[in-house]
Length: 209
Image (cartoon, rainbow, N blue to C red):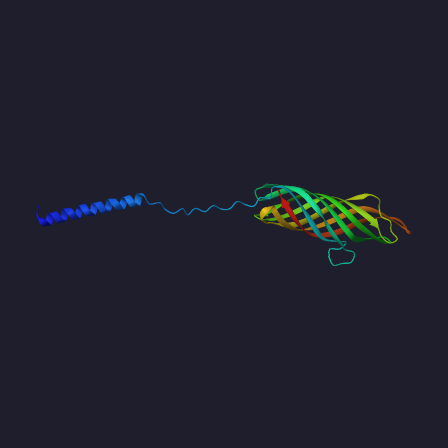
């Protein structure tokens, strides 16, 4: 075999070996894992309890006269299906000296309990909801006025926004409109019945478990 033929054969064998090695390297190559696992959506389901504070006033304006400080506790349970939530909540509040006008004087609201239903939509950690329920309010008479004995039943409508955080905590702002019909009062002018309305604006914290 001539020198030129040997050179051609050697070059061909070298090219074949290089191609085989390159193919083996490609076969053993693993592409980097670029998959992304989306974090799970925030869960609102389950039991919770918390506390709240705010203002109760006979007028929507929280700076009007006759307002009182409202503070209390709440506990409830939420059921979540997709972005929708339905739930129930029990709430108890001390209403301070919230004064409502009645014939011949003013009446004070002292304590209130509420059983509420809630329904709304979630946007991950944000929950926007409406609420409605029954209330029981304890009144006390003011100057020259005697209030009703026992507790009076009323009705509540409202709405709120709640923001979830880590560790099961969330913060909310809620508005309630409460009406209590046929509240009986006594004064020197005699007996009277009044439909009592008030507005409650409150902020609160909840802990889910």
